[in-house]
Image 1 (cartoon, rainbow, N blue to C red):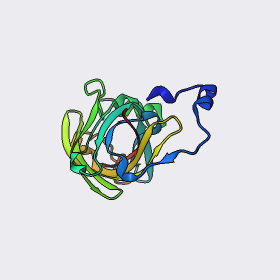
Image 2 (tube, helix red, strand yellow):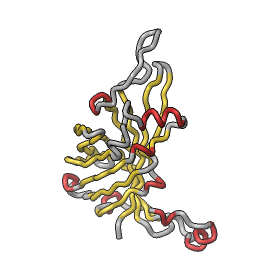
Image 3 (cartoon, rainbow, N blue to C red):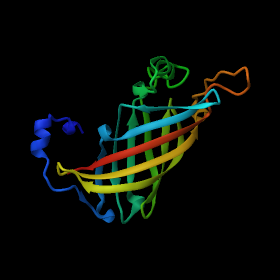
Image 4 (cartoon, rainbow, N blue to C red):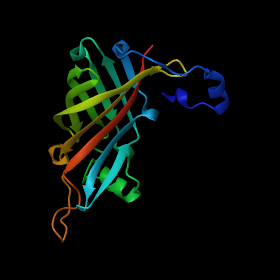
Length: 202
């Protein structure tokens, strides 16, 4: 995944003048790895009942087997390191890494392993086991296939965008504080946002 970190001169020499080739959707069957440098695993939550705070994890890896003809044979595995959480505030990130939330010293990884995959055209539905702080719950995430292409470096890519809402208390992420005006500081409902670019294995 690090092969995109090239100098300008190397990239310019390697890039052809022809446009990127777009592939037929049904040609995507194969094994893939997530290109973390061109993907985002993010989340958003309401703060103080009045605004939305957004963040993302910066250290993650994943793989997938995609079967366009038999979607049920597809599978996905993802590992996230919550110590890499980033919300734009060092103090907030430190609190999220602490025992009040992810407790990253005791639980250094979040994992997702698919248990069922369905497809309807460009729409995919992936159900899997999401494990956070030693607690595993089933989650279904709808995805839209956003495109397939061969990039200028010869890599076959496929893109997916997905989102779902979970209750953080289901994974013992239960810290909160009451507001004097009523309500709580952090919403229990968390929206997960996944923008994925995956590269087909040779």
